[in-house]
Length: 221
Image 1 (tube, rainbow, N blue to C red):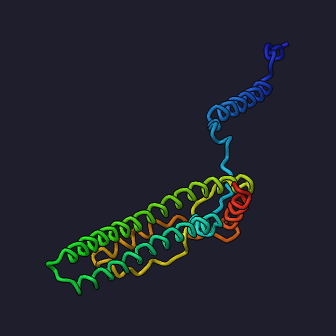
Image 2: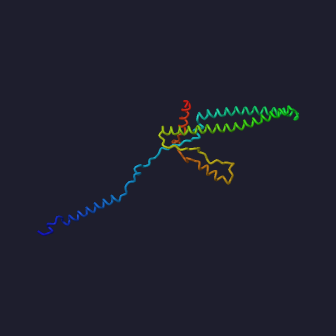
Image 3: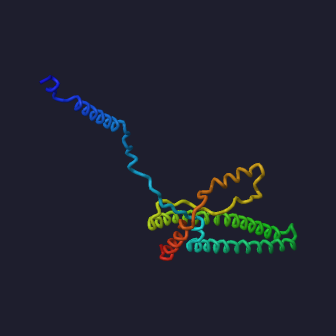
């Protein structure tokens, strides 16, 4: 029997084993060279439910705003009545002065009284403007903060994940007080204040927020 007959592995078998080994090495190499998945890829971004709200409309549409606005106007009308009464008194004193001798004691007394009334009238009118401005600012600030809370509550209730301020759908205003050299800055600043360019009415929760806040106000909250 020849040496070749006693060979444990025939040349044909050796060739087959070599091919299999080569394939196994190639597969292993491909597995090693294949980039591993980034851990962050496990968290794929998903669309967020986004809504819009017009906070200016919310505030000015509230029953609470109307009630407070009436209080401020009533107080202002009361002060305006006081100013009108002072104007009437001052006008009467001016008429009295016309009929008196400027060198008389009566003239001096009425003249001083008239000046006191003028000073009081000026102080009252100045304070009225300032108080109304402060009251309006305080009301707007308070209702703005309440509106933010209401938006959050409505968003959570209705499963909105994000709410952005829609603002007014207005064209750039024609401001006659803007000088020509400042017109571009005025237009640019107006454009920069826009928060949402377009939003469908179906994602606007303004009326929902108004109703939510009016219900709470009616309940004494």
